[in-house]
Length: 429
Image (cartoon, helix red, strand yellow):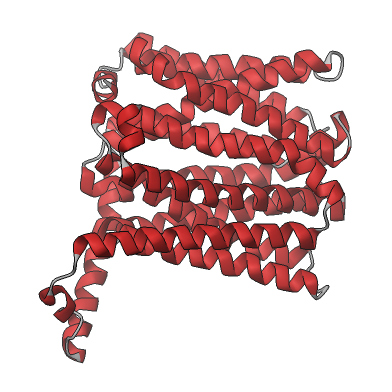
């Protein structure tokens, strides 16, 4: 931990992550609640969830670019785009021109910039910290995310009641402006360290035909890199992780798009929505805090099925108790998110260590895109399910799905012994 505190490069990444996540969290909270509040129909929150997932799918195409281009420059570009999107929404809102569909179609662009930023952070971290610090560094990044989520979730209900949409968007614009300034500082520091040589400067002074040749060569190389990222996930070890992770995201998305309706039904008002998000964040951050301990003391191949069992049982018990005994329901909600918090850290670290260093960006974005496809389908299914059931049933369905994943992984491990799990365990040590 002390080494990480002294690591200036890592501290800069954390600083940028804080501002990006502040804006990202506030944007999500505003969008999902406002879409439900304006329409009183979970179908529109499902559309919102679909749009969030759609941008995650598009993130797949950015992997080769992240691996090849300057990470600091990309951070500055994505931070700038995010700022202008929120500033544009603020302008429409002040002019009373903001409506549901403008909000919906702003989601893919803003969310894509956030996902690209997170992917860049995930690529950079293994290069700036030692292997024995990687799980701890990822835990810090995750706790930064969930800690900020916890802050905004705790106050989101109050913000939505006390402040107007215009004021919240103005606050978010300021946050994203600060993120842009931090990204520009990171870019400036990188340029000063590199002190570009005359040869590097001259490489931009090429003739038109040479530029076209370079562009064609880059495009062919881009397609090759994109294909190599897809081929890598066909590895048996990677597939053993991808399949349960895709299932997890499908089920979680079904539940998540129904969260505003669930919050309104069980707790009532925007403050109830903020409370549920707070419980989610408390569970996630506690899971992030214990993940390093669990990975050091238990084999990952055994731990992952147990986490799915732990989380699935908790979701089922939550749905059975939340109306009759709300306190017990809240406890099991936090416990379920605790399991998810640990799972996210383990999967995130594995996808940084299993690929070679020059493929982390591609594998990471392919992974995120596959999860996004699952979340996209889950959002659509969640919108359909809520039309024929109450708002609690999707949570019950999510719990059953997690239990099924745990059962299948457990049976596979007992029957086939999954020898490739040894590779996973070795990578995590």
